[in-house]
Length: 458
Image 1 (cartoon, rainbow, N blue to C red):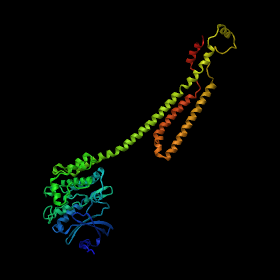
Image 2 (image 1 turned 90 degrees about the horizontal axis):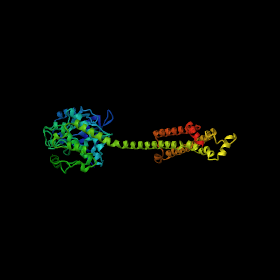
Image 3 (image 1 turned 120 degrees about the vertical axis):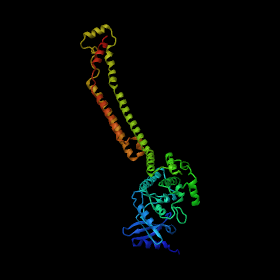
Image 4 (image 1 turned 180 degrees about the horizontal axis):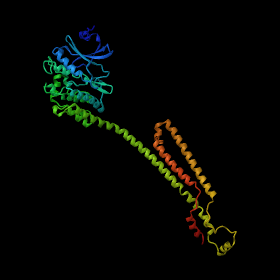
C-alpha cells in the first residue's frame, strides 16, 4: 500500500478552494508539475512547485517580483504565467495547460524531424526569445522539455522562472546545495562558469543545442554524470552535424555551429538577428519544395504544346492534300482537249473546216468540266469531309467516355485541358474554311484558257 505524498495535501491547502488538484505530471525538470482545475473558469491549469531544498534558500519577496516581471510577457509563442504564491515551505506558480506534447516527449518517442520542421520550431522559439530579450527577460533554461508543440506551432514555457530563482538565491546562479540553476546539458559555457557578465546570448547557445538534438535525437554533450556533461560543454566541440544528418542543407548546419560557438562574440549577437537568418533558411527550403509542382506544370504545358502543334500540322497537311485536287481534275481534261488535235491528213483537216456538223475539236477554249460536274465533285468532297468529321467526333466521344472510367489511361489519350480543346477548335475551323474553299464551283482561269488556245492549233 503506497503512502500518500505529503506535498499533495500541502499544495491543495495552498491553492485553497479556487483549484482542485488532479494529478502529478512528468517532465518538470527542477520543479514538480501538477495538473489542477480552476473552478471559477472550469479550465485546466498547470501548477509548478519548487522542491523544498531549492525553495529553502529563495528570497520570497525577490522571487515574487521576478515572477511578476515574467508574467508581463504576452506573446503567441510564450506560455504566460497566471499567478505565483507561497505556503509554508512551498513556492509555486500557475500557467495554462497546453494541449500538446513537449519536444522531449517527441524525441523520446523516436520522432525524426525534417529540416523544415526544425526550422519552423526554431522560428517560433527564437521569435519568443527576441520578444523577451527586448524586455530584459532571459530564459536561461531553453531545452526540449520547455518547448511544447501546440498545433502547427511551438510555444516556450517557464519564461523567467530560472531568472527568478537565481536572482532570489543568496549565491548567484547556485543553490544552497551547490546545484547550478538550469539544465547542465543545455547551459552555455559562460553560464556554467558562473560568469556575472553572461547575457542573453546564453539563450542563443541553448537554441543551438536544441536544434542539434532535434536533428540527431541526442545532445552532443550528454555524459553519464552532470559533472562530465559540464566538462564536455566547456572543453569539447560538438560532432559535425552533417556527418550524422547528410540531408541537412549546409547553411543550416553552419548556422547551428555558429550558435554553439564557445565564445559568445562568435554567435549571432541577438535573437532578432538569429530570427532573420532562420527566416531566410525557411524561404530557401520553401523554394526547394515548390520546384516540384513547377516542373510538373512545365511538363503539362509541353504536352499541351505538342498536342497543339500536332493538330495544326494535321490541319496544314490536310490543306496541302486537298489543294492539288482541283488541278488533278483539270489535268485529266487535258487529253480531252488535245486528243482531237492529234496529227491528221491535210485533206481531213480541210474537210473538217468546211463541214459545220463535224467534231468540236477546233474549239479548245471550251471548259473541260461543266458546272454540274464541278458541283458533283464539290458535293462528293463535302460528303467525304462530313464522314471524316463524324468519325473524328465519334472517336472524341469514345475517348471522353474512356477518360471518365480511367483517369490514368485518359491522360495520354485526351488532353482534358481547355487550352488543348481551344486549339482543336481552331484546327477544325481551319479545316472547315478549307472545305468551304473546296466546294466552290471551279472557275476557269482566263490565263490558262488563253495559253491553251494557241496550243490546240497546229
